[in-house]
Image 1: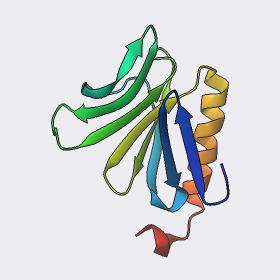
Image 2: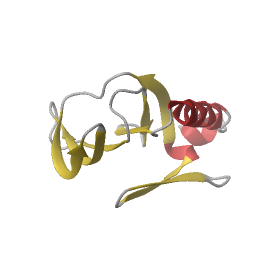
Image 3: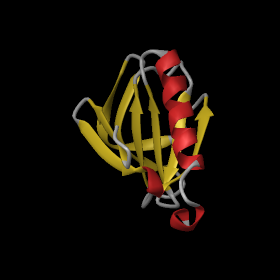
Length: 112
């Protein structure tokens, strides 16, 4: 992480998201029904790029280390979704609080 963005490296998947592009963040217990475009599922892990089952054109990025734990649901660029959690639920909660604070403190005129 740096002052302007967060970099997520999860397995072979990498994404860099500017804080200014983030619209909302929440905690969820389950991810929605998705169809895998590429990625993998193993035990409690789910990683990859998925298609929304209701809108196949819409891609959803999933970086989940433990499906049984709460996940961070992050909407960015007004409609793109990313789900993430870490193997340690306390670290996931801390990441959520960090992202929530970063989104809340972005200048309002830049988020529009």
